[in-house]
Amino acid sequence: MRKLTAFIAGLLFGLGLLLAGMANPKKVLGFLDLAGTWDPSLALVMIGAIGTAIVPLAWARQQTQSLLGSPMQLPVKRELDPRLIGGSLVFGIGWGIAGICPGPAVAILLTGHWQAFVFMLAMLAGMLLFTALENRRNS
Image (cartoon, rainbow, N blue to C red):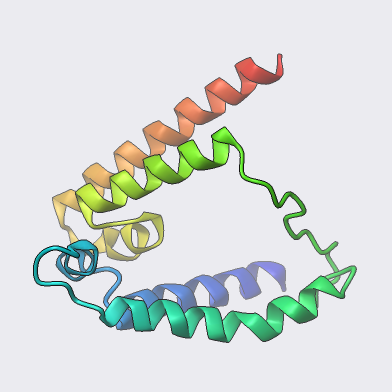
């Protein structure tokens, strides 16, 4: 049941990314281009996503387990630290350069665009580097 639920959630998420235009790098770069021909439509997508998530997140904060019986695991750390800020900067710079972030990259991977493959390789390399650094940090 958990695998089916994860599959359906991923499918719904990917479909939402495609419908919202988040899988179109030109649309994303147009949103990030504040000094040029700014496209504010993705701001509406973000506002809609936040509005949609408010009620379920408030409910989840009051629960000890998920609907499928797993322990509820919500972030508890609330302060900013250099690791969070650095990771956010790296993510934002990558998003601004490529116009793609991880979710849409997976959604457009099967379209055959070579840029999606390059992005995925770079993302996987970054994940491996992070894992190596974390292992070194924790040893």
